[in-house]
Image (cartoon, rainbow, N blue to C red; front, side):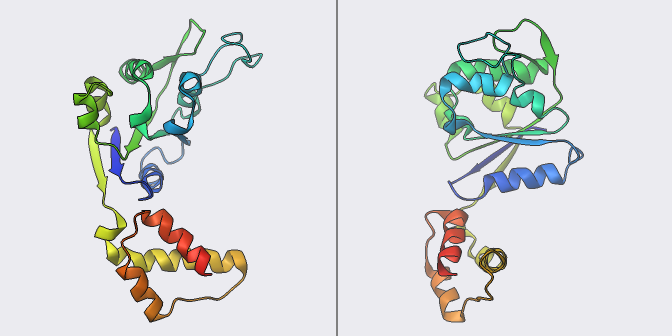
Length: 207
């Protein structure tokens, strides 16, 4: 089933997506991830669906596979799904319905078997009401919704996260550092606007 993960920036949405993939029957297949907000709108379709030779200026000689083809038999993770333009939403919906892709500039259809996991920090219902996100695509993606609460609402997670990050940083920098109880109290009292990503950076900074 398609999974839609919602959470603030830095809560670890891609880590959740990777964990879902690893625990699924598709774990032997590829896990392919893309941050939709980080790709120019003009290039997003060719990234997702691939392109044929000569499809546009600068296209590779033999064309190129898109992420749907690369994720065949596995999982495609679309982060920041709320950022994709309306015209790409139409193409994405078509691929999800037909289970086949047509490369940019191409005529042949390529069957794909891909499970979709998407993530966003936006209110997609509000986005649909204001006409920025297609309602039919939203319901297609939102089969299994998962809400990841911000770190300030799950502070009991701070200690295991710190211990995990500390283990990694000690190995990276060849130290044997630890947090004193007083230091841990400071970490518990902070509100963490940057969530888990900020916590990880603070641990590395301290080490």
